[in-house]
Image 1 (cartoon, rainbow, N blue to C red):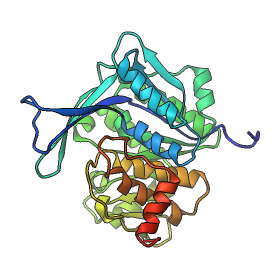
Image 2: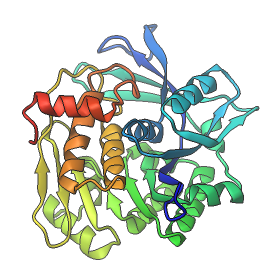
Image 3: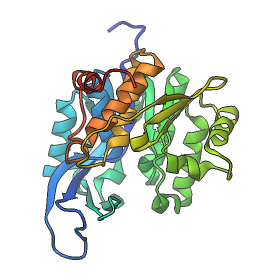
Image 4: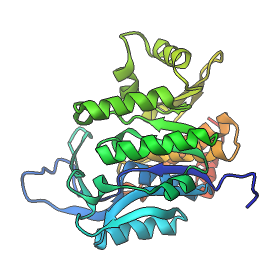
Amino acid sequence: MSADLPRFDIVTAGELLAEFVAERPGQRFDVPGRFQGPFPSGAPAIFASQAARMGARVAYAGCVGSDGFGDLILDRLTADGIDTAAVGRDVEYPTGTAFVRYRDDGDRDFIFNLTHSAAARLDVDDAGLERLADCRYLHVMGSSLSSPAAIALIDRLATRVRARGGRISFDPNIRAELMADPATRAAVLTRIDDCDVFLPSEADLAWLSHGEPEAETVARLLDERRMSLVVLKRAARGSEAFTSGHAARRVAAYPVDERDPTGAGDCFGGALMAALAAGEPLERALQLASAAGAHAVTRVGPMEGCSDRATLDALIASHGGAR
C-alpha cells in the first residue's frame, strides 16, 4: 500500500448482534411463535458488510461474547473482508441479541439485549485507535450511541480521525427510546454538529425540524453545521442529496418485491459511502446506494441482502440504467 494512502477507506464501530426474525406478520412477542435465525446483525455491521462487498477497505470496532453467536458474527465479518482486529471477545457477557416482529401494517417491533451484553462493553486501546484512525471516513450510527463505553470510544476515535484529516459520516437513526437518555441525545447532537456527510431519514429530519419545511431544515443544517452533504433517505420514494448552493439531486427507488425491510437504510449508507470513498461522482454513488437499499429488502435477515457491485449494476441495468 502506498504511504500516501490511508490504511482503511471506512471505519465504523458499534453494536454487534445476533438477530431473530418472526416468521409471519402479526406474530406477537407475548405468545409462543416461530423465529428464523440467528442472523448476524447490528446497524453498523450491516453498513460495514455492504461497504466491504462494494470493494471498500473496511475496519470494525466492537465486541461480542465468547459464544456461538459471537462466532457467527465474526465469521460473517471476516468472510466479507472486514478487518476485525478491534472486535473484542468478552468472557463474562454474552453476545447482544435482537428479536424483531412485523405488525400486520408492516411496522416493526424490536426486543434488544444490549445493555447487559458484550455489545455495551466495547473498548479499544490507544494503539488500536491510532490504527483505526488511519482512514478516509469514520461512519457513525446513532443506534451505537446507547452506552457510555460506545459514546466514549466514538468520541476518541472521531477526534483522532479528524486530526489525521479524515472525514466523518453520520446516520442518526433516531429512536424515541434512545433519545429519552440525556447522554445519548447529547452524543447524537454532537455527531450532527461534527459530521461532514449527514444521512437522515425523513423521520430523523423531522426530529431536527423547527417546524419549517424539509428544504428549510436542510438549508439550515448546511448553513449552521460543518456538514457539506446531506442525503435524505425516503425509503420507497428514493432519496435526495443536498449541497450548499446547488439544486437537490433526486434518485428514484428501484421497485422490488419486499420480504424484509430491516437493514435497507444501512445498506443504502454502506453503498453510498463506499462509492464516495472510491471517488465516484455523487450521482453514481446515489444510484448505487438506491440499488443497494432495494436489493436489501429482497432477502430475509438484516445482512442477507448486502450485495456486491456486480449485483447492483445488474439491478440498475434491469430497470433501464440511471433513474
